[in-house]
Image (cartoon, rainbow, N blue to C red; front, side, top):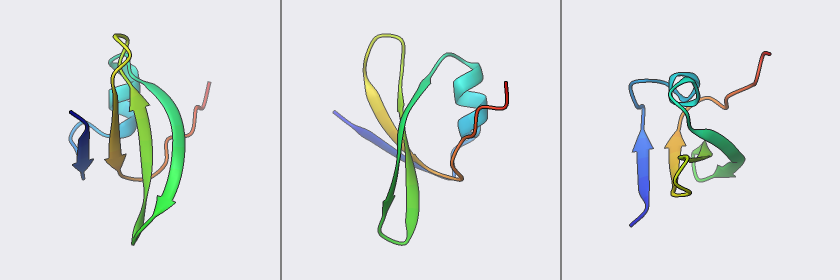
Length: 55
C-alpha cells in the first residue's frame, strides 16, 4: 500500500520532526510531491510545499 496525502496536517516539516525522512521531490501533475520515508522503511507522498532542511 502506498499513501498519497494532499494538504496534510501536520506539514512536511512537521512529519520530518516526527521522524520521517525526505527521499525526494517530484514535479508531477499540477503540483509537486515530496516523497517521505518512515523509520520502518515505508514510503508515502505528500502534495505540499517542498521541505527544505534549515539546520
